[in-house]
Image (cartoon, rainbow, N blue to C red; front, side):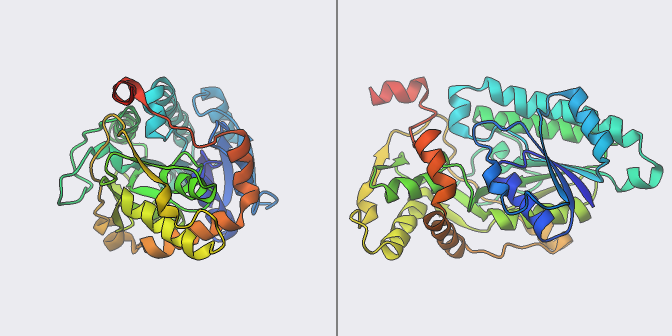
Length: 358
């Protein structure tokens, strides 16, 4: 199977490439613009494989996308390229509109041109798989879970841009017949995660003895999904999902943010017994919440389990331990980022937070 993966140098995309090439025997063309959070070092394990190829390119470049599809002749497109950090979308929503909405439109059009050129048998097997987020559904109350039929109510510029891209994918299936599948996932975590996100940020802040920022009271709830479990789910949907269908992917791992943070601190206390920063929980600092912070997400993944047989292998506890151990053992990957590109500064302050902090 030949798969064109967009955003394959990112966190989830690199996990997909490692799985598809390293374990599943697929041929992968990784197309990535190499923005700030992309990291080719995450693909070190497969970079020399004959079945793997990397191409730096922007999904919004229609001519380039068309050329790559015609030359590589993929059986499927797995679209992960996106601006994905909520805090950055508050500071600068324009890039999210350009990449997540306009970029998806351009990619859909290039894929449609390529698809209609295929022989009938290959066209029938072709899939365009769009990877999205649970944040398009907005915020849940204290009970219930998001299903595939949940109403879209995005509350951040990031979520709104992903909601718009979801609707484009649906429209290209309904209007033009493009054989699409769409997945909405819960919060991913695991190795090779850029440290602007909660879990790697907490790990690195705590390791360095720095204040660990927790928004509000830390009682916002997320459904945590180990990234390798997500990659396996994406393969199941890409290869066996029904065209035109949406599948929710969740880790069945609801935890409050403060539970995640204190869990990481406890693991570091255990794994770094000589650390002068123990107990690491003493580093926790509650800070002003970000604007539009959704209270709770939770995913009902019954459909992907019943139809495709997927279920997560990792619990929050096992996945979090693996993640902390990975960061402790792989300084070669994160130290260049931490020292040269991003040092854990707060993002997404916005006017309302800045005013409250002042």
